[in-house]
Image (cartoon, rainbow, N blue to C red):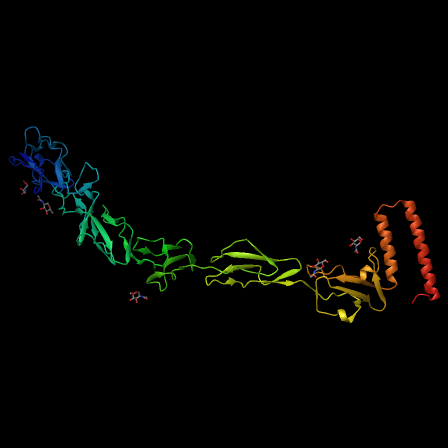
Length: 454
Ligand SMILES: *[C@@H]1O[C@H](CO)[C@@H](O)[C@H](O)[C@H]1NC(C)=O
Ligand SMILES: *[C@@H]1O[C@H](CO)[C@@H](O)[C@H](O)[C@H]1NC(C)=O
Ligand SMILES: *[C@@H]1O[C@H](CO)[C@@H](O)[C@H](O)[C@H]1NC(C)=O
Ligand SMILES: *[C@@H]1O[C@H](CO)[C@@H](O)[C@H](O)[C@H]1NC(C)=O
Ligand SMILES: *[C@@H]1O[C@H](CO)[C@@H](O)[C@H](O)[C@H]1NC(C)=O
């Protein structure tokens, strides 16, 4: 009778048999070579007798019919053959591996001895430290022992400097638990104020931190700042000041929460002041002012210009300062002056005229140095070109020029001829003119020869 149990503790499947009376060697079956198993008894099995097949650990007898009558016989037949024909041992299997709390395994259906099965913790759970998630199908068809594998995901206790957890802190938090924070006075929370332990054991959003803040910015008389009603001002915050109606803001309009030492936060500068600032109406004699206005508060700008014949000394623009003065100081309008005129190869006719500056309308008379004479520039009369007048804009009327004698007449002639051509005078007329010129030059040469000219 064969008993085959598939439960832990069973080592072997055993086929039991009844020994027949012993016979001669000739009347025996040959002992087959069975991998992973052997027959018992191992010799002298006579025709008609039976034997048991013992498989190695992890193996079970195969090919032996033990289903129909509950018996299985490995029988030595009269013809020296075995029945069934080929006794063999085959690798045994384990049942399905056990279910493990909060874990799943890869989907597998066959588990021959030696199979490894790996478990994975479900979402929200993590593998306990120092445990192996692998179980093996053993030779006794049981699974190697599996300890507790998975635990609820745990988050480390969050650390927050200059702040605290709103609920009483715990050493450990598990998946799904929430924590809220509050910062100490003088600090502001950066990041989420409520965080949750996520399935992978991290905090989401990440643990916030407490950042230093500036206290309220300084208050000012007759004015206010844009941060009214707030107590904490993170680094970089700007507050703007404004003054009551009619008052001027003196100083920087905005200040910032900043840090001088990289550690403590302070406001970037002193708060501005709100004051009544009026500058006196600017008065510039012989001058004008734009824009036309009647009050001159802090910051007001005015531009100046002078009456004709006068010139501005000082800045053309001035602004009303916080102390009620004008900056730059108001300019003055001074009479226009012309610098002493310089005529190359000429000089002032009267030494009485010799001055560094000349008032407007002043007229000076020139004479040319020896060997030079006035050029009329082919235009004005000789008399006019000897004087110059100081104009109301500080310039002189066109100054005369002194030219070397001799050359002058020729130059004038050439100039004249040139302008004649430019004017489109008829050719016949030009011809006549040129003949006159020729005559003129000939007379001149004659004069030189006779030594009349000196
Ligand atoms: C199976 O074998 C293992 C290891 O050899 C042993 O620890 C375990 O107790 C056995 N199980 C049974 C049911 O015999
Ligand atoms: C097998 O048979 C032989 C001869 O008959 C005998 O000598 C031997 O002792 C037997 N062996 C066993 C184990 O019975
Ligand atoms: C920051 O402020 C604290 C408190 O006012 C003070 O004790 C500390 O010395 C300051 N740190 C630096 C670097 O100035
Ligand atoms: C210069 O002369 C003009 C015209 O005669 C006169 O209107 C002007 O007032 C004079 N200027 C000065 C500075 O004397
Ligand atoms: C030439 O004469 C005209 C009119 O008389 C005058 O306006 C102009 O300024 C003169 N040019 C020179 C260079 O003297």
